[in-house]
Length: 249
Figure (cartoon, rainbow, N blue to C red):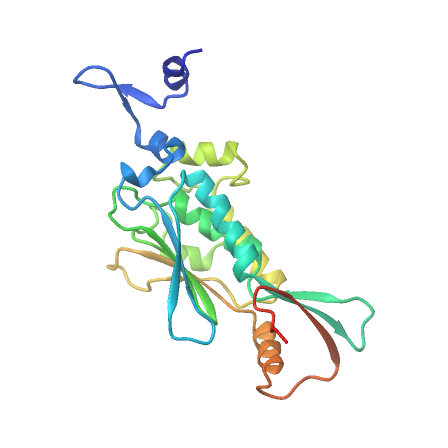
């Protein structure tokens, strides 16, 4: 097939009223080298605290949005995620505690990309602080889903999508496992890791944004303080560290 026929068969283009063809927005988002050249702020920024300073640094992902989803998760895994392997004195098996579990980050970051209102002039912001990560989209969830229901429920069988074409393509690329289940998997991952509950904001009816907040695992934070010499160390366990925040000798 020619590229034109392939684009027609995939529904990526439509005939223009001025003659010729016009690329649909979802096709630009999925297949353009830099979508924001055509759609304003169609990118993700991960903004993180620089350890030991009061500065923030940003990493911009402005490639096709399905690649954004993969690269943002890879960046988290390689740069932000850390873990302690703990051997409790009274148990044979060890356990691993993460600052934030990868599955929860992946699901929430992908949800931001998939559920963004792309006519909005704002980019997706993921903010990494010492005690929490926030995921910000500058639009509300599409009814009947609400902020309140996302805090209360774990599954949404009747969920509607702002971008149904993107949803189908993300599913075909295995970026989402099943429709309406991303929040459940994020909540489950946090629970397995012993992390605080996922929180959605705002808690009002008028601010036009959606924020998901995942808090650092409290046991991880406590051990990190002990490693820095803050607080009383727990002598009943042996701890091994793996991750980007490893202390240098």
